Length: 202
Image 1: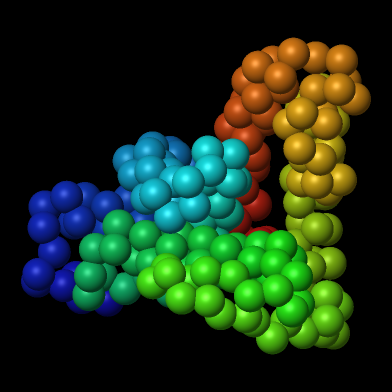
Image 2 (image 1 turned 120 degrees about the horizontal axis):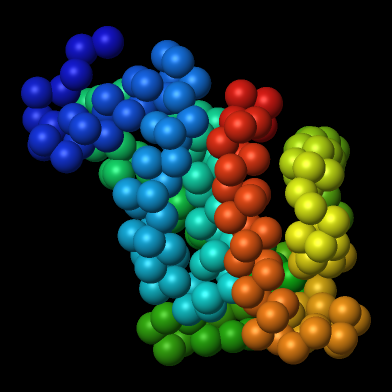
């Protein structure tokens, strides 16, 4: 594969990391790619959704998807461009699904221009393909989460499988909300590493 002539020095460095990650399954290369762009991806997503917790979650998902598709990346453009596109598309899907679940079927709401619009929402039932994909995703996450320490595993299960809010987790575990957030942050760090380790199976 020929490296694009238009790549900057920074983009060439990223491309070399991608090659190391793919060719030799170099975990340090995955870690460095994540370290170089995690904050940028997070702040981009935070601007899109204005919710720190969701931005955290979507950042993990973006890297998980990017590492899974790393073999599809071509150096005709910068790795960062490709990564941000994956992250923003995933975020748009998230926003769309959230709106589908949040707005009532017949109540109009204001769009960005201030006009009213209503949405024709299909029944809140997954089609067969979506069900299979959701099952596969949950199975993978279960496999990954099973490797976490029990304390972190419990938090991840409450947050992502039971879909409890931080406040609900705080009440359930009788922990200060700050502790819940700090421990979930650590649990997500572990998840990052496991996502890298299992990227070939995502």
